[in-house]
Every structure is written in structure tokens, then in C-alpha cells.
Image 1 (tube, rainbow, N blue to C red):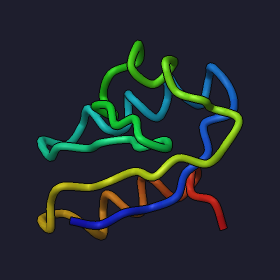
Image 2: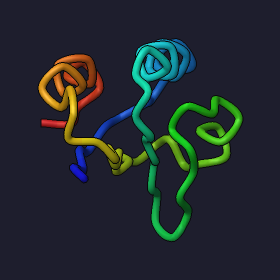
Image 3: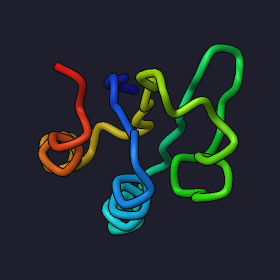
Length: 77
């Protein structure tokens, strides 16, 4: 399990983020405060406070490098 800080501050970013994640069979969660939702759920993502960075939890060690490469445009440096 790996956690990455990401920012989804526009509707287009949310759509492309979900499209990128659905290419993988792994499970992903997004956490904001005490709320945790499925990162592949557009409706779930819009229920979070998107003005702050989110914790993206990757529940896989397989393809981790490829997943991190795909998440790179959303990652908070």
C-alpha cells in the first residue's frame, strides 16, 4: 500500500484522473480528512473538498512504477 498526495482542482482533471485509474485492476482510495472514497468514482470524488490536496492510497504493489508514472501529473510536489 502506497500513499501519494494529489491535487484535483478542476473538472477536467477529475475526469482524466478517473479515466487513467480505470486502466488498472488495482483498488485506489482517496482520503480527505475523515472521508475515504473509491478513487474510481467520479461522484465520490466530487463529494470531497477538492480545494485541498487529497491522499491517494494505492492498494497494490504490482505495476506500482507504472501507476506512479500515470499519477505524476496530479501529484503535489
